[in-house]
Image (cartoon, rainbow, N blue to C red; front, side, top):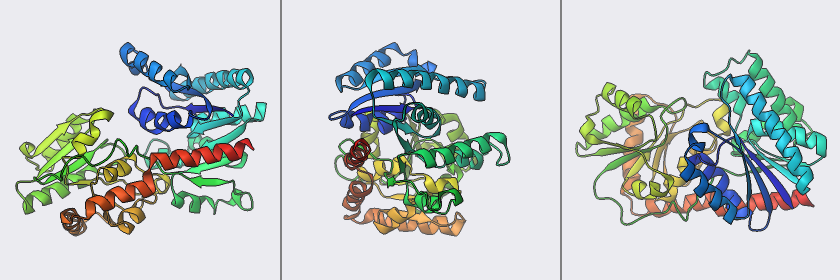
Length: 393
């Protein structure tokens, strides 16, 4: 079979490498894959990284077709990118007689829907969450606005036209089952969470002797960082020798501002950046991790990548309910604590429970086992492979 994979995320970005290429490199072992991605200009200007990645992708047998990502003016730029993707996609489908178009999220699915309408190619809608509702819940769009209505119209077309749908969570499937327009017309749906390469994200060395609370990733929009600061302050009250290790790419100034506002002494903080290859080494220094995500309607369809990576390294997590299947996994597997509220009492109780879990010698292996069960990249690849086979029949 020939597969056309379309991603609006660039392959020069960490997300593209961990959540697109990591899968496709394995799938390319028995599939012919053409990959369209949209690369950010700053990433593309790094000639050394670009050529290194091009050689790496070519060595797997994937044929990479990078296009330029355009940001402004937003609607016009996105429309232009969609037109470019459709044009290139049509040429590839006809030139290489491709069988399946695999679209990652909504903008690529607009391209895929056009390709299906024109050529009859099978369409795999890899939805990655309720994108339109995320824009509203993140205060980027108005629910009454034209952009939201247009995106929801397209969502309906995707779900009705797709030959197969992939959801990140079971919670999202439950919600889709009550969509009025899907009554009696539910598409074939598979649940494949955001997976982690557990050959890479694995325990390194013995558990750390010092008490280090870890935080990985972004702090903006969806993440409740002030609540994380409050948890660390409470930890310092219990254990004045504790430290917090924050791994973040480009929000250091904001992080320092929030730590200072929360009264955290900066000598107890280590703030650093890290590339993908160094992440397991840094995570191994953590005793436990904390992150809180703003619960909302759209987040019931989300699965944070960091959860699988942290658990794979044997690190228990303090987080919250209302986000996909996360609370059920954390609590059900006894690999952390999922808070139902963020008041002072709940934060303190959650921290104490997390510290008890971290002190149990069996917790580390439970975390690894939970990662294998719910977030294994190898299992995710196998599920995609089975979908491809079904669509190719």
